[in-house]
Amino acid sequence: MVEEEIYTVRQFVRTLVEDRLRPFAQEVDKREKIPDGHVQLLTQNKLFGTSIPSKYSGAGLSQVNQLVVIEEVARCCASTSTLLTNQLLTIYPILIGGTDNQKNKYISSLTTGDLIGAFGITEDGVSSDTDVIQTTATYDGEHYSLNGKKIFVLNAGEADIYLFAATVNPAINNAGLTYFIVEKDTPGLVFGKKANKMGIKGVPTREVILNDVKVPHTHLIGGEGKGFSILKESLNFTRLNVAAQALGIAQGAYDEALAYTQKWKKHKGNSSSFHGIKFLLADMATEIEAARRLLYYAGTLLDSNGREVIKTASMAKLFCSNIAMKITTDAVQILEGFGYTDDYPVERMMRDAKITQIYEGTNFTQRYVIGRQILL
Image (cartoon, rainbow, N blue to C red; front, side, top):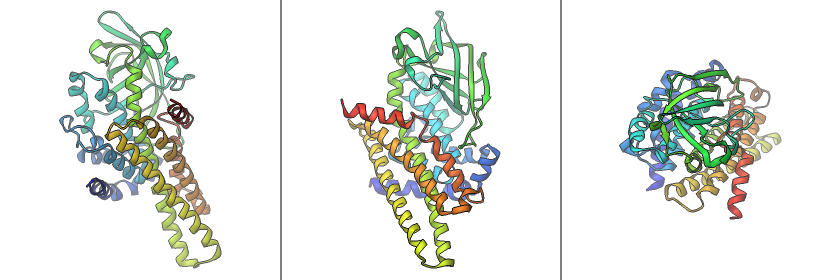
């Protein structure tokens, strides 16, 4: 029954995105903008909230089905799939640590796409090391005042609400980490320099400066010092979402390489050089299937609250993103000179794949997490 449901979801999403996303992915990359029609496609078909409970306007399906949705969208357009991963990055902390009022106010609107979210934790010179977060939150009895700067904030300047990590006490490291909801028109919220990225160019990425931003107590998520525990639980979901994105990019590149090879064989026949490509395709197909099985296993653990979900989520993120980088590079190699031009999409896919090894915790971080879990 589970396999049938996954198949149904995959076919449904593939039917939606194959003709409406894939033909425009190159244009999204060149113009560095996702068309409104892409967003409407996601919202109209509840793709922002596949795994979100129905009481918050989601489809209420399993986490594995959410991964399939992201995978299929990323197979056609990685930039558009980033809308999904980033929206869920905003939803999960509220779902995990928010009050009923916060959930009712924000999650349904994020799930339907009526609100677009953004998440800010990374800082210049600090990266995502939450022990040394420099953005501060000072309480005056009525409001928190946020001061600091975040970098690499996806959707910055276009999002309706922002989740920012700040510390209420820099001296106590992670024990002071706290999340705050900041709405877009809040005074003191300033959007800085835009990042000129290698890939996923359709989603704007900017620095955000917080200049004495006043946030009411009701916009604090989970209470003071609860940010780190919310972050750890959220990462089990969001790392798998990035792994699914990586897998989709890998699958898309493999599909292009296979189609090119079949055309090549038709014209040149079964030559000795063709056998080398055939072996390479065999390795690519095997690696993708191994990545998919690990990813879905991790998703199943998340659905069932399995004990090893932290380790397995990091393994899936590490493995799928590394495979995405390898598969896209191999696809460029198979297409030879054509692969190095934007006449074919594999060069874009190779650029898009790289970020999956970096965000939601670099792959160095994933190895650290896996090693720590092994040695518990």
